[in-house]
Amino acid sequence: MAAEFELRDPIHGFVQPEPDEREIIDTKVFQRLRGLHQLAMAQLVYPGANHTRFDHSVGAFHVACGLTKKLVKSQFERRLVRLAALLHDIGHGPFSHVAEPILKRYSPEEVLRGKEESKIHELISAKIILENAELRTHLSDRERDQIVGLIDGKFGDTYLHEIVSGPVDADKQDYLLRDSYFSGVKYGIYDQERLKNTLLVHEDNEDLLLAISIDGLHALEQFVLAKYYMTTQVYRHRIRLITDSMIQRAIVLGIEKDRIGWLRRLYSYDGSPEYMDEYLKWNDDRLINEILREPDCYSKDLFQRLRDRKLFKCIFDADPNDFPDASIRNFVFAGSKEFYEPREATIAEEFGFEREHVIAYTITFDSATKTESEVPVLHRSKTTVFHDESALFNSVDEKIREQHFKIFAPFEYRGDEKQKKRMQREFKESILRMIEKISNPQENLPLEGGAQ
Image (cartoon, rainbow, N blue to C red; front, side, top):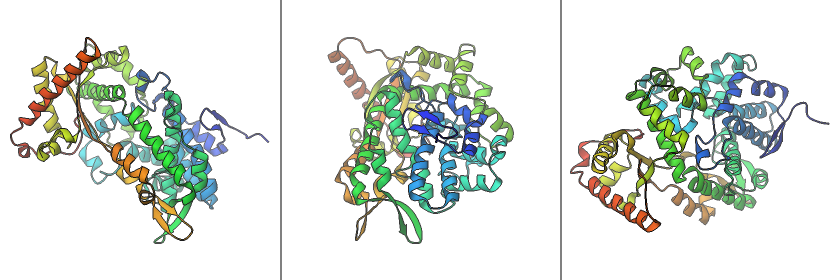
């Protein structure tokens, strides 16, 4: 007998929500996710990467349905996990993760105090789930509290939270396959069915954790490799990093230099009903189009460059090994604008760039708390953890955590590949000398936060 309602998904086939879950999918607040690209402006690199947070949320929901059917006995808890997976990205705004540092930068300190471990989109997601009028018509007060608690890891056994947000969660299981498919690459493919079938619930110190059978070790290794390849080949693709940095710089300039009032208000989360009503009206295209309607300004110039694909180039790329002096190395990778902004100004003056067009950008893998490293591996007579069982994991994990410090600027490399490499070498040597001239980096202690 055919399901009452089903969605046809290119990754998972038919997705079959229950009637009450369909009602939530049909709400305006959920449909809004169709306007938020999953990978910001990655379509400038991968033309097919136009998939959205809507697609991904439905996909994560489908994966969670399969996991709960296998792992969760209680129908009540199954429903909560399914709903949590469906709503886990409901708080994303224009450009999703790319704009997260900007929300952190301009939101009032008192709103974020005591919530340093949460990303702002997660705070906004909780706010929407708890208070949105549409969702209130479909979910009871108790259900909404429990869904937020489950996403936060404060309700229920740990494994329920880990199905939604953990080392091998439904979120990753969907986005690796989805991002790979729409980017037109094969790097994110792994055996999702085998991984699901070898996941188990493990009791540890009166808690229940998500674990994997020793028989699933290779499936988990394949999953880790998929994440590694997608990170190095797609998420950290050199053009993707440049577009992300240009988006961030364009928004910051729009707020600080161009004094665009609506833009500052959009990225100053205060949790008020007025803010939430306005926030939910925005998506990627609306933000770009509104900025392009502004009079000539810094922000408009950068978004026009993005629209026309006139992108900046990387003129400097360094890793920690390029800085033998530990104090300078720590200062460079601390992510402090107190270090980056003077360096940007010096580089602009030295090479004749416009000051606002030189972007210092760090890449640091920040998911240590959700790494697969500590996933319990269950043998017949003992329990170990993944990093002890898998030699492959340790080498991949070390590689994926590599840090890079890059400088982007509107420079055009001309000539053949040999000339390009010569110019890149000259840029690197010159910029390294500039950085090494820092006489006493300890005089300016780095602050928290990125340079974007």
